[in-house]
Image (tube, rainbow, N blue to C red; front, side):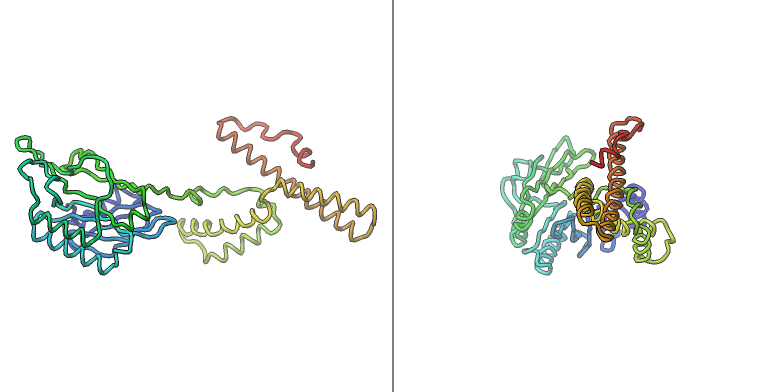
Length: 342
């Protein structure tokens, strides 16, 4: 248990880059604490002193519901929890939503989940839990690890039970068909921790840092594009966070500038050179101010693209040398400029 006034400073110190929430509004001891990290997004939709339900969003997937459970040791209180879950199932239409439920239920579902041979038949409390899960459409997700998840740690009278579960509905299995829960060794606790693997790989696109290419500054409209993008992103920066935000938005304009003008630079150089040769022949066959001007324009464009290509090659060589840990001497062949001119 962790008091509310201790929760925030402690978790902020232990997990500075993480987010967290708890059910302290429903229980002063905060029996349930959820901790998560970007890019996962979490929104609490319901809480009580025995459960906390949230809507979780991960990239490129539909949001799903997760209910964390920490059931009471008292039978009457657990009955309230079963009723609460049934009401939650109805009010949120969870029958048609992806729903995971996990935690300490403090109740076995079948006599086989008790280690003692003396427990050989189901009792009323087991039937109540079975009936509740049937109404909820929940069942155990396939798992690895021990079948018992709690022990009394008493060598003289050892007892183990399956009190902890990771439950899913059929909609969750359809959305995450390879999901798996793993019950791990208890370490210092009397309960085994449970690890849920959704078997879903987060997309890597967009997660790499943007690398600014110096040759972008050679574009004649570079200053104008940056000024317009900077102005469009709002007022002056008053903090480092504001600056990072503005640079992040400007990155889109820089990517567009690079894509529209310098993508496939080798093909652009080759195509421009072919067009230049064609116009040169025309200027010889039918000399006119128009063909001469067109030849000059194409020659200027081709020369400019050759410079960009050279910058591009230089950047590529520098990157390769950096990866190999070699000193950056003679980054380019001396004849690169001439070779780039076909």
